[in-house]
Length: 365
Ligand SMILES: Nc1ncnc2c1ncn2[C@@H]1O[C@H](COP(=O)(O)OP(=O)(O)OP(=O)(O)O)[C@@H](O)[C@H]1O
Image (tube, rainbow, N blue to C red; front, side, top):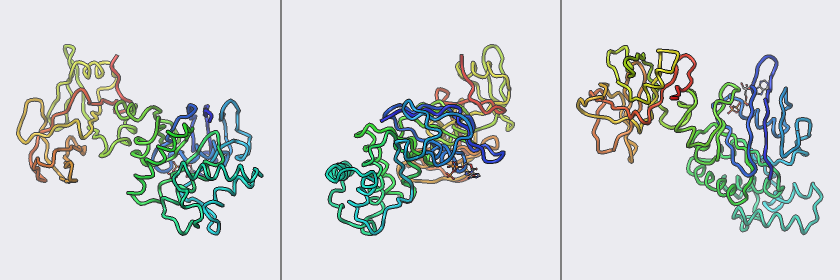
């Protein structure tokens, strides 16, 4: 396996920058997810690494080699796509063996590699079947197996689970994660699904508009989003973002809403606001960090429930606050009705504050 380094990577189509100065390192054996909304540049970035698209500027290293000008076949990579592109007339065995036959490997070595891949992916009993005799999940496993037999330095995967139904996707998610753990493989995995990235990856590279927004472990991205885009993209339901006006006095700070309510900040949050250059601040809060009260409580803010969605384990309530939609989760035995008056208490330890102009997170010293 090998590490991969992207250095100031740029891809332009005419005057349009699809990938903008992206720099990141994928360590040897690391599972990195490139994640972001449609059109953010994640597939283009993966295709640049694969050699399917030419680099406009910047460098790509696989191991210690700059691979910018190498053909895909010389880059020591294996790709897994969402359409598995299996040969329909060939058996699973032959689908796995074919890339090795093309490389003119000895027959017994091909057999050994195919059987080993089948063992790792638990599909030894499927080797004689044709792709049409397999379920979607089994076909996806064959596609993984075909990448595996090539024993590449890096696996590149582009939305490999998006053709599967929801239940199978969850199951295959664990299988790919297991595959990574067992092989200690270097994997770059493209997905638009933040949950897939959060659950599978060692580190996630969150992209938007061709720019890398944040590159860190899922836990870190979740707990310390660098900006409002990352804050609202990662986590479901999305983090609530409430625009407010900050004022400071006597070492303390208060956030005030145009609706007339105000919220005194904890010393640490007050410090963040005091260091900011703007008075226009956005308060970010995840659903699980907002406590819903059914009567007025000191420090809680009045709001009106808008929608109530029971999901079984937890009930999601949406409310409007200062023109923003706020998501709150409550235990299913808390009865809340649409239009009911409620009070919301924010956990200051887990609250986020952003500069409303730059959209960057405010930092304490
Ligand atoms: N060959 C091309 N010519 C012109 N523009 C392109 C080309 N390929 C991609 N783009 C543009 O570059 C941007 C990034 O595309 P890319 O496919 O990398 O996005 P993505 O994040 O993978 O999105 P999706 O999840 O929809 O596949 C898009 O705006 C796309 O329209």
